[in-house]
Each structure stands twice: as C-alpha cells, then as structure tokens.
Image (cartoon, rainbow, N blue to C red; front, side, top):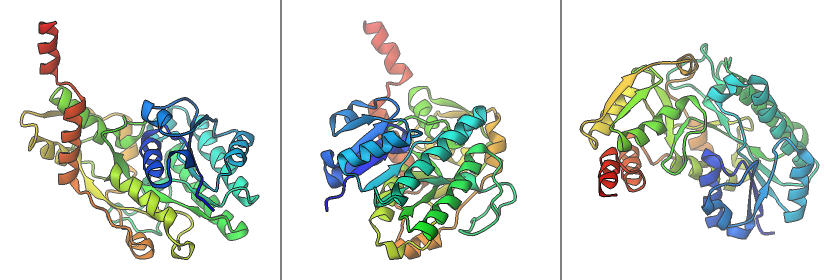
Length: 328
C-alpha cells in the first residue's frame, strides 16, 4: 500500500520544511498539507492543501478517510513564549490535537503518528548538562507541561492500544527558510536575519545562556528517519532525546563575526530568560543513536556559515536598501 501522509500544521516553522521533504520522498500528491490558514506559495503549489483546525476531530477524520491517509505528522502547537501569554489556549491546542489523532489511530483509521515533543519537558530540577533520556521532569511552562503530558499519553496509547506513535524531543531549531514561531530559542534564528540586514541584534537572553540547538536540516532528516525505521527499533514510546549542538548567545555572536566582521550584540533579557534557565544546557541522546542510528551533521560552525550564505541571497542589507532608495 502506498504511503499517504497528512501533515497537520504544515505551514509552521517545522511543518513547512517537513512537508516539502516528504513530498520529495513520496510525491506531491501523496502528502496532504493542512493548517488553520493557507501557507507559502511553495506549499500551496506543490501538492494538495486542506484548511484544518487541529482541534476538530471529525474534520481530521474526514480528511484521513477522503485521502486514505495512513501516516499523520501532528506539527500544530503553541510554543513556549506564546504559550505563557495564552496558557489555556496553549493547553487546549497542544493536548486536544494530540488526543484527536491518538484516538483516530486507536480506532484503526491511520497506521502511524509522528508527534514532536521538546526540551521544554524538562525543568529547573533536571540535570542541565548532558541531560539523560530518563531523568527528573518538572516543567515550569504550559508548553512543557503539555509536552510532558503528551509523552505520557503517547506511551499509554502504545502500551494499551498498540498505537504506533513516534516522537522526538526537539531542541531549539534554526532555519533560514521560515521565521521564528514564538519559542524561547527564537533568538538563534532572528539573530541571523538582523546580522545580515542591520549588522546588530538585541538579544532577549543573557550572553552565557547555553541551550541545545539543531539545524532544521538535521531535524527534518531525524523526523523522516524515525518514521521510516522498523517498529521494533523504536524502544522509547514517550519521546527520544535528540542532540545537535549547544551554544550561548555570546558564542553564536562570535561565530557570526567570522563572516560579518562588524556585527554587534546588545543583551536585554526579558521573561524568556526565566524559561531558558529552566531548560537543559545540553542533551545526551545515546538511545536515539543506538536504536535507529541517529547522527547529526551540523555543528555551530557549518550551521552559521550555511545560514548566512543563504540569508544573504534573500535579505537586502541596510546599505543595499539605501542605495536602491537613492537610485529610485
């Protein structure tokens, strides 16, 4: 039977790039993109799109039946920083959407689910350095609480009903293709846009705040690999730790200066600093590497070089804007 995929939240930070990768693998018509609103021209032109509310179970069921879907990637979520502003909305969206998809799988209408968890499941009592797969988890954000609860539900549905659900605890994700989505690690995306356009950036975290990060290319590849792995290789049915790189704002700024010599950084920590302080500084991901052969390809150096080279093609610098204005 041919793989037919539904991506819920296909227009978000991860969903956009994941959808395009899945269409490369399975074909445009085999991957149904869906979101609460229409996405980029690339998403809309490369395959089917359905307007979908992830909290509407019957709507999800109808689309799954209509397109004969057998795999669902549930990427819709309200992230950490936005979730602290709207805690009840964040809880409802993050939990109800997951339960909808788990129940549809339990009823035998789909075969496999991918649901992303996050480093936000950890809290201030978690060991910060090389945080292990199994450890203390006392999250302090609504996003983290919803992800921790979601992990327990995934494990429960697998053990009780045999639902094939797979998950990764994503660190902060960095991409040049999509803008930040309201998370605490967003500075590590925004900094590149400001470096190219303005040569300066005001950071909302302290200079020595180390956080786990990952280049989007690695994150998308990990998602595809865990979903294509044989079921018997997936030993963790809550969610897998995943490590790529770990750095501070000061360290990424120094790396950017190797390419943008006059780049400057100002630090003005806000409410997101408290969130970041509750998260791990680095992750230990031996189970993912052993179980389904996960291996990251990007470190800080080659990620920064790639981000800047791509964004310089897309973003006009302040100098270029001034020259264009004078010519005009």
